[in-house]
Image 1 (cartoon, rainbow, N blue to C red):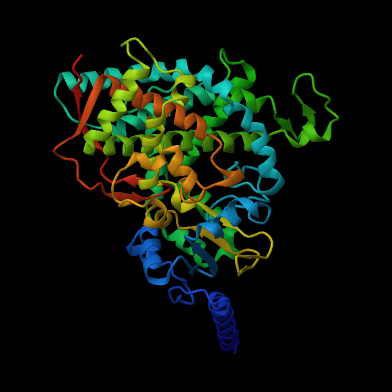
Image 2 (image 1 turned 30 degrees about the horizontal axis):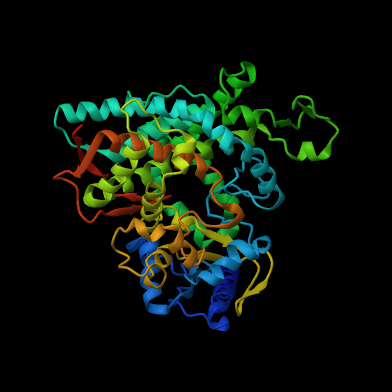
Length: 516
């Protein structure tokens, strides 16, 4: 009898679940938005099991047009390459789209304490952003240039050795070591040694985190299919971390130790963590240590960070500073090696600004280098490495250019299709043409035709540091060497998709000493 009752309940629940899911998946049909037909359980997730997200978006773009819809489990995702719609979402109606996409196995951006700035939204995001912004001012950037130059000195020693022994090398792997040491030092005063020791524990675990994002674990699939069970998936994720090693937890523990150390001993030089520590709030004692500030001021209290927020922020800046800059540098190195004319033109600009061997680039000089900036921008047009996370969640139902977007719907920018749309770029978009980014050309183009890291108020806060470090590195490398592809480098370059779009087999080059 009990078995029959349970069977009946199960059948009723299954019918209810099926009808509810099918009803949700009619939303784009009702809106008149084209797109692939979803499976009632998976939505369109299985399409990404066979092809990377950014390539599937381009395929659907060719099939359905600039704007289409698909489902991640039951969650509707509106994908668009319409730059006017993107401008409304990312800039003009930002208040209705201030939240980023919530992934299935991540912290709750509203309820959890250990939320960093990338996932935070609303007033919490505003508070975190206001604390961190001063760390990336032009004044701070100028103070960081000697430290960055010191790390580039170490990088050049390694390249010199490869050149002396006539060895090609993976520049991507080398840039990872550089950017890890730089962000660890500039950001947290961490004593990493990745450039001198490729087995450094910190870089091995940073690589492990990024490598894990290229996998397709069943737990994440379940999280997409049943998002309402978010807490269950998070608990399983943490339980798995107790059973097997998880590099994320190792890095978090390392951050906690660094934070405790800097609380006890003020660092010899200012860094990002010190800035955040001076804005920390301890909810247990209700004591605020922010110097000569009125501790009764509620505005000040709202600006203060808890210890878990500090850990989350540090982890974000460590991984983002390490990964995005090194990958951008790798793609620049690839394009310079396969486009010798562009490389020569950039070397000529470098020689004009830095005619002597002893010259090291400064922040102010770099801002004047037009062709270097064009190379940087064109590389990110061809390789918008952070494209899969350029998305916003609608927080208030609204109408965008005739499209009725309901609260909770995700709007995903189809960045690769925008960046490869010849309407915006005139010449063949497969070619590397830095001159697309002259001031005259930029003024004629839609402002959202180029958005490698998104646009609007939530653009990357560390972009200024990434550009400074990246451009300083390119200047010093190309001042001394010309780079050519190695015999093992695949042309065109191949990709693998994870947290960012990565060069699948690195970027293998040989360094040729320039003539005096």
